[in-house]
Amino acid sequence: MALIAALSLAVLWLGTRAAVTASTTRPVEGLPTVTVQEGDTLWGIATSSGDGRDAGVLVREIMDLNGLPDPLIRPGTTLYLPRDVPGQ
Image 1 (tube, helix red, strand yellow):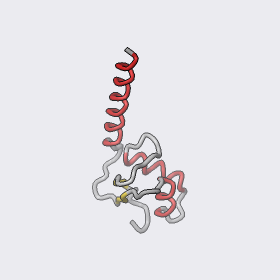
Image 2: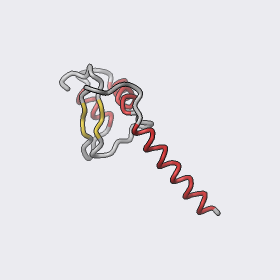
Image 3: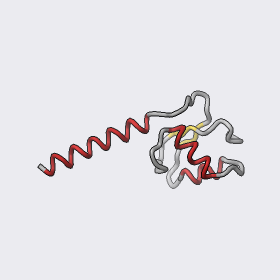
Image 4: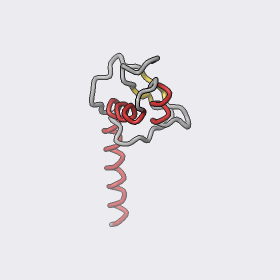
């Protein structure tokens, strides 16, 4: 019985992760993107592309644009960046 409950919770968790990752809170058409590389963090991406902007604010904007529930990112993922990020 416990095994069935654990499997059900795992499937539910995976399904909600996929749905959240696929959703965005704002239109992203035409926005610059970055592909996550091994070792990248949202903080690092925000710092390197923010041109002096507050990295914490930029991390939150990137998370909102990409529908991320937390700052964990995986290599190979393409992230949208806010339009007003210089140099992008």
